Image (cartoon, rainbow, N blue to C red; front, side, top):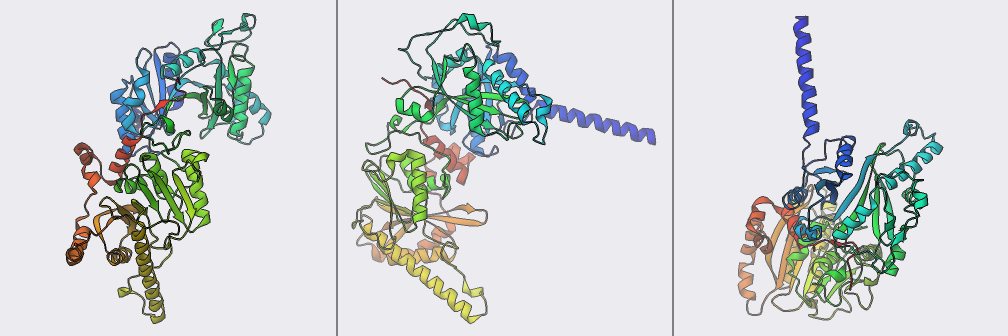
Length: 582
């Protein structure tokens, strides 16, 4: 029996080891890679250094590796870029290789337009770096030795990168380089002092101006150092190199922008205790002046930020869906009378820049300050309340919009206060037996209903009577929706669309589309109002623009996933970091 037990245990152990080995060899493409970076590095070194392959990373549209949007992005890379191996997801990136002989790198921006990719980056270096064993001490007692290792690591990264090939690849994506400056002559007397994996020729192209950023990923031994200190160490390694010191010129990003010089972004990633890589952005989202759809009043310099905002308010994808429901047309004036942090305004200005003006009003100075910071982050300093701006945010009261004339607004997009924001809405049918508590709650609910009526009356005053004018309001369910519906009735308006969606883990939201009633139809609308309201609640119709989406997308994606896909397809094609100008 003991021998049989030993044999059984050995068989189970063999099967377990075989399963683990197979798992490491076949990582799931839709999840973070099971392949270790140390195992991936030799393959990169062997192929990339012999100019057989070119390695890239892309920043996918979502930070969630399992999101359907990332899955669609992964599939587009496989289908359109002729990758040599299954792409790998790791560290918030999708990494892949293509043949070095692949032509038309400049067409990648158009090919990947519908994928939602945030940037494409060349990877000219990915290797294990030499870190002494004592540097791996967790006690933090070896600062001098670690500092010494840091300089050696940066030297290894600089010397191990083929900068001539990297510059050539950068230019193949449409990035420009100085043409009028003379070629650089290398002092051949100093070449023998350096050991390079990729020796440079004696005559180089015009100098490269670069800006370096260092990112510390989890587990790096240099985590105690600031990114600015790490960046200075990289610059020092370049300057101390006899061949590169006069050819690669470090430049501050702000100075480069002011001088309008082409600058190569160099991102150094310290992955763990033994691995590092370089990423060179080659394609990025377009700047505002590169978007042909921009109107004369729209932003003109900074790159658009389609994903993160420094002070998030309403979620970006849901905000996009709400703004899209308004069907904003050219030269229209759009108002958010309770704008908060301005997420609706930012989404509208990014994706529908042909509007004449976006106006935001809020009674909270702190929220307005954050709205200004979000607008500044998305578009630039010049866009905040300037004469050339088409986004204006100001302090005011949504119940009395002073300075906004009657029938001057084409579209109103707003999320009125509900739930715990300002009120305690309770259904007293099953409430407490305490009479005073019930009376107080009745007063709060009555005040909320009255507020909604005052808001709708004021918003109807400033909304045009045109058939295309509308309000798109967001509210939760229950009594809040009932109070809003009553306020819409009191303002002699009608609900044309009602869409329920998931607003939070345990919260359902409603997108309510409201239009003014046309004269002569009040009695007909009044008779069918209650019936229509119940019909809208029960049917939970999709919005019209959702029904207009391609059928294959409607069958593959639902609700927020569909919104994300459609939003990503509206993002303009990626463009070179430093496009050639006339």
